[in-house]
Image (spheres, rainbow, N blue to C red):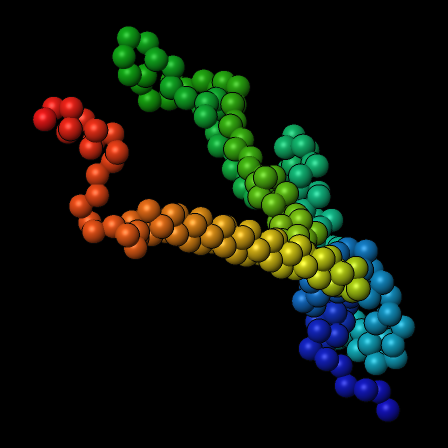
Length: 230
């Protein structure tokens, strides 16, 4: 008994059934990987019996309903782009509009000094104007590019494994080391400022605190000067 398909595997089978390549169907199924990884994943899925059975079932249904495959659609778009306008005709399936208008010629009045009398007609060469319009070639190129998956956003490949974890761990260790060095320099600076403040305070206290001083001491030079003046 075949194992039920996942949602991505069902989408993958639908893509293969309509003409996609394995890698295209794998990416359309929702895988966010590179093209090379998509090829490997598609090969693995295509070897499974339940996937093969589902693809065969979808193709059988499409054959009954006669749906156009993506490959056939792209072939038609290529014909629209590559076929010159001069090769189109009223019976061409690539012709969007074909109009044939008579602009002059045939039976017409022979004018002489105004309006021609009744029965005075002559036959002249007929001149026809053909208006031919094909399908928009730029629009066809755009549709073909969409079917080919050219407008799909690039797959984001996320690396994983020991090498990535090692790089993350190394960067984290660098950040922690830098923070430790910064904290150590800050502690040293604060310690140096503390010691400098303490030494200056001791000097000031020593100069101001004299046990034999009554608070009115004068410098010897000032005393001698006072005696000389007296």
